[in-house]
Image 1 (spheres, rainbow, N blue to C red):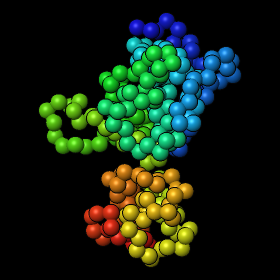
Image 2: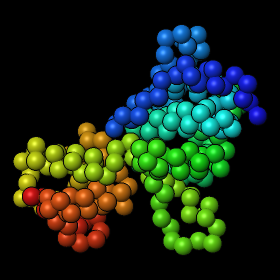
Image 3: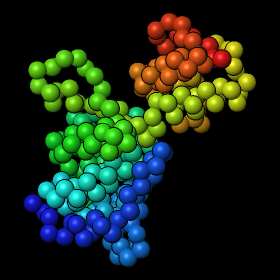
Image 4: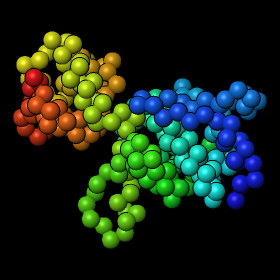
Length: 224
């Protein structure tokens, strides 16, 4: 395993896990590391080009730091690309987990471990497995995950704030209008997976700030 120099290199990196995801940047003194490639305009942090970053480390202290770095990277990458859900079958071959420049890839089992960390209190509850029903093999239920670069509660606040700010309280809008219409083209939730969007609406319903009528995209939503 590639472990010899990881602790020293990792300790020179700052971990940032704010409520809205941002990239992890190296601290002064690590600028000698060449910048990694971009993906769809996304600038990867410098440790993405460090080969041992793609091998989860046995030392618990180093592993904790490494998991936090991966969590921050996943949130930042998904926020940049407006990804709300990761499917492991496709994500494992994406630039997020596969750095072709150094021929390193985070394997599926390691990705699951990173996501499990993100779902824990230690990982700030920044992910959740998408339920697909009962399976005999536990790993079969870990095929895709919601990535909470903003949590449903934060999205709910943003949606309600937009409705309030555009003077549409008391109006009935369709789920389609709220998710995909021209009116929300500049909003971060544009194109959000419908299941995820409805979870955000459920937050507002529980708060008494919205009522939902119907089940499909033409369903109406009244805001209070």
